[in-house]
Length: 281
Ligand code: PLP
Image (spheres, rainbow, N blue to C red):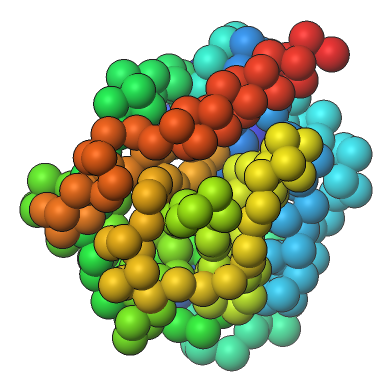
């Protein structure tokens, strides 16, 4: 496979990353994951906008216009003949002698590669289990930072418990998943944490909120508690790779009837139709 390094297509064994790359030493960088369906980048513009926004929030300047960057992603997918899969792209502050403050002169290092991935259809049909875990992350979760220790530790704890995802909470308040956004449905209304500094405003989340508008489903971007979560009629999570994933059990307790909810399934269908439309056009 080809990989992209600072705008150049190279082979994997040609990639040379410094021992003092600031991404490697400090996690000083940001990233994106973009889904590829039938050779097309899904919601690419939104992901690219967020990539530039995250970079700007940590004062890294991407040395390409968004159009050039978009074409690089598109070419990478084409060159690697990715049908269904994803692009991972990250930018770090670059290579400099190790000191915490920004180096005076350094160039960002951008690396992108592709991977083939199928849609998790069986899990999306059956639903998954989740586990509550205290959200110990920093207060800028709106940045898609390479620093993922809080997320990694939470996911590991969930994984060891046999759960698919960790539902993070600050005190009583549910924020999001370790790599997803969280939603609960009660009496026909969908609740999800507002897009603040405490969550990553998922691109899938934005697609879902638009679909809800089209379908006439009321959404309240209002945080809910752990207790309220357990009393929801339906529960689901969303991310670029998991799409809309029903959560049927939290901490061993059934949500609703313990099967994927009706409205969750309706949203899954709408999401799939939307994705097929996008792929066609
Ligand atoms: N929240 C966190 C912490 C994430 O890492 C992710 C994605 O990986 C999401 C939410 C979902 O974002 P998106 O729908 O853009 O993939």
